[in-house]
Length: 165
Image (tube, rainbow, N blue to C red):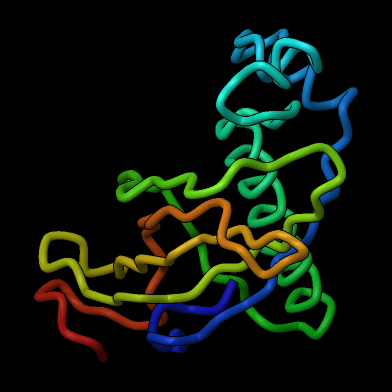
C-alpha cells in the first residue's frame, strides 16, 4: 500500500473479476441469505428477478476479497522491490451501499475502486482518511454494486500537530 501522501483523488484501479455460478450462489445463500430467489431456480423464475441471482451480500463479499487480495499483491510487490509498505486500517465504515441490478448465474463482474476523497485527521496525525468508491460492473457494462468505503492509511511523515513534515 502506498502512503497517504502518494494517493490522488480520481485514481482508479481494477482489482479483479469473478464469474458467479449457480452452485456458489446457492451455497452462499444457504449460509447467509436464505431467500428463495437465491436458492431455487423455479422459485427465482417466479420472483421479480425472473431467474436465480446472487445475494447482494455475496457480491459485496466477493468485491471485498478482490480489494484485499489486490492490496496484498501490491504490498508483496513493494516489499520485493525493497520499498516500505504503509499500514492500512481500520475502516470506520461504509455508506451509500447500492445494488442497482441483480447478478445472475454466469455474470462476470469486474470490480474496481476509485479514490473519491482524501482528508487528514487532526486528532490522528499518523494517518489520513481515504474514501474510495468500490464498484462491480457486469459483462454488459452495467453497474451491479457500489459502495463508499473509508480506510485509514498511514502517513509517511507527521508531527504532533498533524502537519505534514
